[in-house]
Image (tube, rainbow, N blue to C red):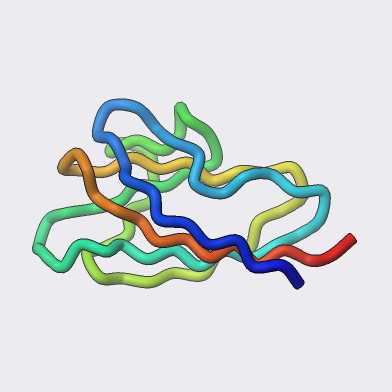
Length: 94
C-alpha cells in the first residue's frame, strides 16, 4: 500500500484537486487544519461540485475518511480563503 500525503491551501474562488484519480479503489483521510469557528473546507467530486453551495463541508479540526472509486477525484475550496486541508491518500499497489 502506498501512502501519498499532502497539505493543500484552498482557495475560496477556484476549486483545487486534492486527491487524484487512480485505477483502483482507494481511501483518503482529510483534515481541516483550522481550529477557528466558521472556517470550512468544502469537498466534491469535481471542480464544479466543490463549492460552498454544493460541496460537503468539513468542520474546523474535523477529520474524515472517504472511499474513492477508480478514476474519481476529490476537489476542495474553502471559506474563508486560504484554509489548509491535510490529506493522506492510501492507494493499493497494482
